[in-house]
Image 1 (cartoon, rainbow over the protein chains, first blue to last red):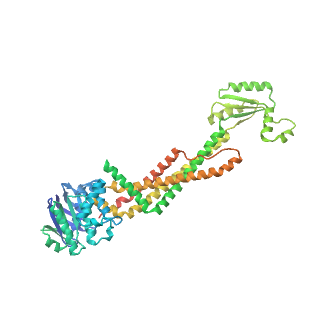
Image 2: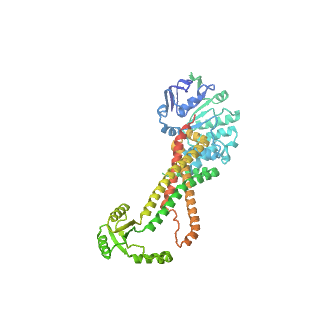
Image 3: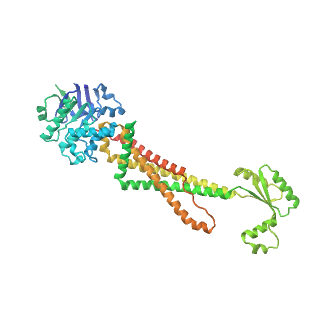
Length: 217
Length: 302
């Protein structure tokens, strides 16, 4: 489903974020991407979502070469993913419901069908009762759950999460990991980056470890 | 098709929402656009009115021929015949000097002065109605008649109308220049408004791009906004013109009554009104398009 072959990424200024990285993720896998901050975890995720382009090697997603995709094709590629950010990237000028509604509006869904999906997604992350609230009134863990609701409302086949538990206490982090696990159980492909050792210990799964831009065996 | 319609309705709703969230600055923008557009539009309406007035006054052009004082009755009948046979003349009218004096006494109330005259100072005259109304043809005819013997003075009565026409032409050019300049201003206003909107909605644009929004999707609300603002500005201009003309007409009623005429200013026609609205909406859309093209690509998620 996702395949990296000898991928490297240098940022302008010469900093090499990824060096010669190769791996493959099959459909339905839940993979942890670990390493210290600055090891290249975020860059790797950005390459998959075409937020950055590789300097060398090929990134294939569902058989599509991300390095060669045209700018006009990027939006349609991104609709395959649910993106979950450490800083949530929520919009504070609208309530929870409308935040989760955004991906469906972008994809052009029928309003009544959308409303059903939005409520289902909010229900899944336990925020349905607060759909009219503004996200600013949510705690850090709740904001992260809202971000997840927004990522899954479009029922993407691949979830990419960049340090989803980064700033959270253990209980909130576990709640979020439980949500991910439930997606994994229904067949979604997940790639979760984290530097949190405790999570790796309690959730067994394949993990990829990056060190200074290189994949560790 | 249905989802396309739903999307456009959604964008329209979003646009109106944005207009509402900044009511004061939106209102100011609309007013500025309205005032800017009302200047050339007002000039245009005024020129239209002068034009229709002069058309009414000029009617059919005529050439007045004043004969020498020493013409005989034979000369008059010969000239009359020659004029009637001229190919450019449709009809003629002879005004004997006695009749001319009588008319002068009656029409201008100069009876006291004319009564004091020892003899009639007025010449016999012909009034020639040419076939053509074309100014060039009229002048040619006048110049030809000037060369005829026994013709003392030949006068083209529509000469002042030509001067007015030239003046109107000048006025139209001035209005056109004003319209072009203020159109630029309108585009600039919208350009700037949209630039500010893009800056304040930077986060939303970035998130939307991450979630898979196409450029068209992101651009659309801004284009709608420019269009709506232009349309509202055009409506404001229309309102300014219509109210101003009504006020002018009301105050002019007193004036025209004194001169026993029923002149009043025409309002903008429906066609002109629609043109004004369409043009202002287009300019708003154009300003937004330029602004979006300039600023949107700078916002890419990192």
